[in-house]
Length: 225
Image 1 (tube, helix red, strand yellow):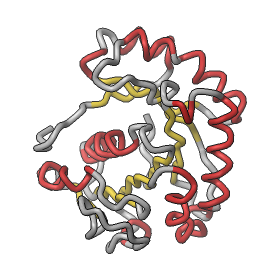
Image 2 (cartoon, one colour):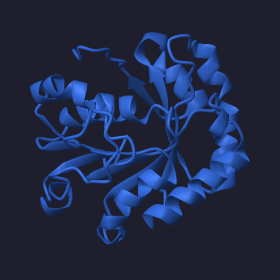
Image 3 (cartoon, rainbow, N blue to C red):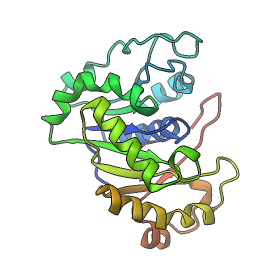
């Protein structure tokens, strides 16, 4: 799985972006020396990501998040330090964009940089089992809304279909056809299917059905990978 210098995860609330972004940053830290994980959610600036700060530090990952994280204050302010993602060329950045098109507005400040960069991915994360992304039409609408708000085009899809702790392997496998149809209709490659590590008996066998797989470790507070 190719690791871009900057990877942006965007999608609706409840798509699992934050858990994915944390696990992906840890994955990146095994390959790159300087990794920054950025919580670019200015609509709901009290992300659980702040709970992961100690565990991320242990991995050498710098967490950039709003000073209002884990409060009930709703203030449209970009996290301090976000600029480092774009100004330091040897830094690998993982960005978790706040849900829906409003959260994507913050990312628009950096649209010109990403548009001129040949080494970034902006991935649309979806969960087929969530009402807001349970149809191809709804997924297409979300794609268009986020692209319009951020002024950046998606480069691929991430199938993160799950039923939280009730997820079974068969649930994820059943989402494979939906993911392929979404890839065709939205004209975007399916970059990966996310699977909790506990569900995977044979990754090689599943990749024949689901394509590239990203194994997810779900961490609960206190965050201890």
